[in-house]
Every structure is written in C-alpha cells, then in structure tokens.
Amino acid sequence: MTSFAYIRREIAALEDLGVTVSRFSLQPWTEQLVDESDRLEAKKTRYVKSGGCIAFIVGLMKTLFLRPRLFAKACVISFQLARASDRSFLYHVAYLAEACILRDWLVAAEIDHLHVHFGTNGAEIGMLAHVLGGPRYSVTFHGPEEFDRTLYLSHHEKIKRSAFVVAVSSYGRSQLMRTCGTDQWHKLKVVHCCVDSSYLESHVPRPLVENSPVVCVGRLIEQKGHLLLIQAVGQLVKEGHNIQLRLVGDGPMRPECEAAIHQYDLAGHVVITGWATGEQVRNEILGSQALVLASFAEGLPVVLMEALALERPVLSTYIAGIPELISPGENGWLVPAGSVDALVTALRELISTPVNRLREMGTAGRRNVLEWHNAKIEATKLLRLFRAAKDGKVRTAKNEVLKAPEACEWLAKC
Image 1 (spheres, one colour):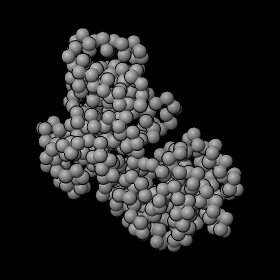
Image 2 (cartoon, helix red, strand yellow; image 1 turned 60 degrees about the vertical axis):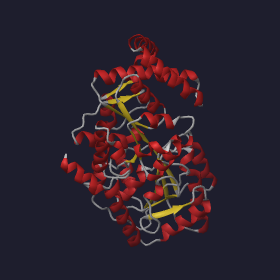
Image 3 (tube, one colour; image 1 turned 135 degrees about the vertical axis):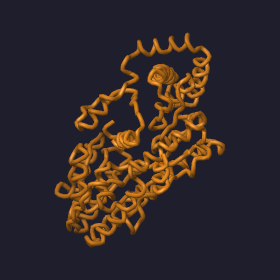
Image 4 (cartoon, one colour; image 1 turned 30 degrees about the horizontal axis):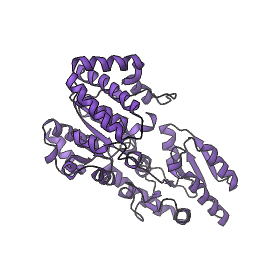
C-alpha cells in the first residue's frame, strides 16, 4: 500500500540480504498509484481476493475433500475466533476461504515461512493457512488499532500458534505481553520500522533557515490531532507570533480542518498541501524548522524518523513508542496528547529556539535514527529470527531487542 512504504523498504532490504520474497495481499490498492515504486510492487503481488466468490467456494470445497481433518480443525478455530470477534461469523468464513487459497499458493511456491504485517484479519488468515498445512508464520504488530481491539482480534491465539511475533517498539511489545501467557513472551521480539536508505546514505544537510514553517505530515484523520494543532497555532497567532504551519496530507477530516482554519482566521498561517509523493514530503521537511505530530494514537510514526534523519527536530506526544524515539531537550519536544495548552507552550518554545540550537537537536536525532532505524540492520534482525524459527531456536534467540552492532556482527558470520 502507498501508505505503508516502510514495508516495501523491509522487503527490499531482505532481498538485498539474499532472501527470496514473494508478495501476497488480500486485495489490490483501489486508488490510483502515483509512485513508480508502488506500481512496480503492485505488479509483483498476488491478490487473494482476485478470484472472487467462486474462487472462495472452490478453495473451501477443495480443502474439505483433500484435507478433511485439517479443515475441521481450522473450522473449530474459526468458530472460536468468531465468537470473540466484533465482526459477524460470515467474515470469518471468508477468512477461512482466503486461508485455503493462500495455503495452496504458499505450498505450490515452496515457501517455508509466511510473515504477516498487522495483527488483524491478515494474521488470522496466515494462522489458518498454517493450521491447514501451510508454512510456519510470524506477525509484525504495529498499532495502535491492534492494541485497541486485543480481545476481539484474539491476539493470544495468533501468538500461541506463531513461530515468533514482532513489535515495532518496546511499548508495542509490552502491549503484546498483556495479551498472551508468560510462556509465550519468549516469542515477542522488537524490530523497528525504517526510513528509506536515501535519508541515511545520500543525505546532504540543508541549512535551517530562520522563520521557516513547521510541518505536519500525515493523513487528515481523527487520531493525528490536526484540529488541536490548528487551534494551538491560532492561539500563538493571537499572541502575536508569526508562525507558519504546513499540513502535508489529505483525508476525510480535510473539511473540518479547513473550517478550523477559517474559524481561527489562519488563512495566512496554515496551508493544507494535499497528498504528496515521497520526494515532496522530503522537500517539505527539509524546508521546515521542525516537524510536529500531535497524535492521540500511534504505533511509531516513520515520518518522525524521516524528519530526524534529515536533521530536523520533532515535536510530538507522550504516546506509544514515540518516547523511545524522542528525548525532550535532546532532539525534540514531547507533550501530553490532547492538551492544547501544552502544545501551545511547546510550539512557542520551538519557534523561539535559535536556529543553531535547532540544528544541534536535529543532528542528535539523526544519530538516533542511524542506530535504530536503518533498513539494512533491521532486516538483518528479521532474517536472524527467520533462521532461528527454521532451526526451532526462537526461545534462545538473543534478547528481544537486538542492537545494531550485534546484528551486523551476526550478518558478517553468515
């Protein structure tokens, strides 16, 4: 998906390490793909729902007759998951049908490990494909939605049957620890999301310019806190500060954001750019003095890593894995989520901070990203887990968080 470029980076990094990666998705992206990388990725992907209802029925019937015992076992599990779910039983029948199709594809391609991103229906389908005789599987949980619906999504069952489970932050791992028995904790690992290599390898520092705008990059949706950010800017303008804010992105809350801009008379201070390509996002960040994300709920936003990699400090909220990335006073600011007053105070401090100090904070942030969010290093950690799962040694895999030097040393031995 275009909004999940970090998954594409992970795939590319694994392929650079010599891993053969086949792509499977439940359904194709329905919107127009503008980015050439997304179009190329779409061509490499097989879509489970491409055959429609007839393929579902054929898949169910074929599995029933060829593997009746495994099919019965998968049916029992599906029924148990449906009872706990907030979705109707028919959804889980569809998931079982999709698992039948996916299982056959995986076996035909001689794939020995399935890795699923997100612990929602995709993880259920991967688990059922395994129960039906498919390969072992693992799951990366990102959040925040997955952690909001842990009981409905039966995370404990998905973790119990998996080879291992990945969280993108220590916070995420702690949330998974709440949903499964302590006997499963050894499966819970941390592999961070990554920034594109272009942010790390070919970065040429662009000087910070005084009075540059602050930028917010993200879909215009409720959880990103755009309305509070607009309100905070309105308060600062009312105080006489000359702050400029650029909202990079689009989404269902655009009308509400535009109405708020009008309400606070911020036409000369707040601009909504609309959807932007990866290169445009990069240029927006480089043209800013800092990135701001006032989110109410997150996993660990990649855009924060991108800003730090480009040597721009960040201002965000004390939620989820964000405090693992941002150190107040060192590479940015953190405020309580939902507090306009705290946001106003932090923004006031940000725009009053000398450019030289902002530059120092950006440099410190880049060091952090280089160590913890390098695609090559994080893919190495994931490959290490794949091999440990193959050898049945996930329980003894070293630490739940593998540090960069350890990952590089292990890769050198392979």
